Length: 435
Image (cartoon, rainbow, N blue to C red):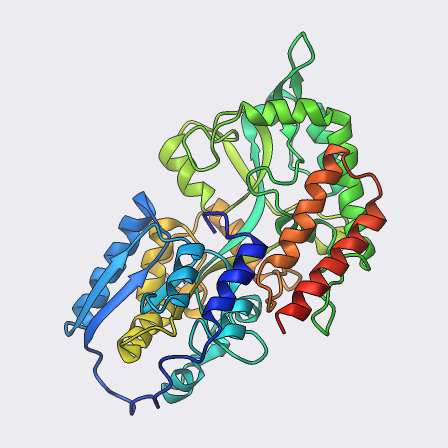
């Protein structure tokens, strides 16, 4: 959600080391057992977001005084995976990547939570359907949702007003037209401000986040790659490449190199260097914390099919119990608290401005909802909203496509159909190796 994940090749190697029988295969305790003992949580949050999480963890400690909970922030998926493979992982881990769930379930790196869910009669119907889909793999639920992210289109109202634009684009054609209209060039032709920066690999411009623009799909029902067979990928990539070529790839690259880091106060949209940008709901908090004077609006992603307007992409953080846990009962108590307690979910959502992942929390009167945040809540609730499907190879199928797209948009690769077919073959080979 906040950090870049481990590469596909490295992930497969790391998960191979974790693919051993779970250390904690004892029967679960009877209902009502009181959690106690030492418990270690690893998570990726830092700074303001870590402070918000720490408040929730303090509430957990008050409810479970016999649990000695230690939390370690700033831990990424690669480090966590390596630690689990070495038998030194945490009891509980929060990952920023829903894409890792398939791998963790498939290898047993995270324990199957079904026995606890059944024992405590946890109603999984409280989770929105798209959230349920990215927290299980092949019938095994080794993860629970820990808040969600939706992606929308941010636009600078001041730049729009200056150009006489009254509303955000709803279609890809409109997005391209506005991107060109709102772009400013210096006298020497270099880019001073970009209407919309279409490069794959820039900030949140991943294939996963842009796939809903055309409704492109990733996998076939049998789990093999559908990238080369789905014409909607051709449609998306053709549109993107045409806009890249209008700007000039070299000019876009030079402009991108001049921009600030996505997660810093120098974020290009926050500095007015981009008129429009695709980003998650968490950007609301960054804007209001770092750039209070920016006049911005938020809208659903532009869609090629007007009947699908309002749909988008949803993912989020996930939490699970490591197979290396020495205190599974306390670990489950923490997981259940963070993913099922309405007060905790709402408090954390209000603190870091991610989307709640239960119907009760979404309906809570204590949830802070303004006009901009509601856009993302509506995207989450839209029946056409999708996510990336879990796979035994984790994010490898996305990484393979991303690698090709980086080459294609630069002109290093020129045969789109052949390139996508090669991606299919590479992905299917990885899936076969992963079993």
